[in-house]
Image (tube, one colour):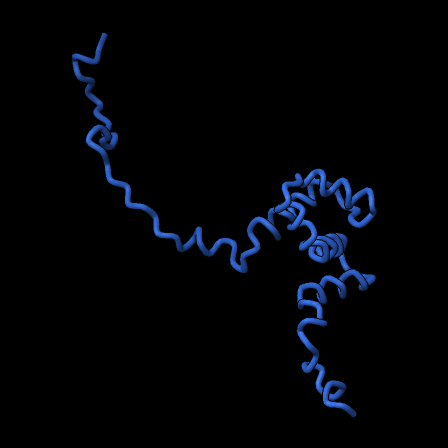
Length: 128
């Protein structure tokens, strides 16, 4: 037995698909995978091509139309846009991390703003 055959981690990273691509391929082969999981896996498998087309200036609608006509995607344009927003526009591991931990600018009241104070007795100059 050769070293590469006995050690599955020995494969060259250039010839191996990324983990994300392997997960997407596995989901596409599963007969019990949900429709959403299948659609997401299809988008992920096409993500680099889609991202390149967006970078080249093509609209998401034009990209979706071509992929839909070629039957490479079978889901709606709305789902396609959602995947693009989630997986291309902001593909962070923790999407809410920045919004939760971002330093909020201190709000200093300006000279013209003052807090509301209810006065049950109206001022005479404000009455008609």
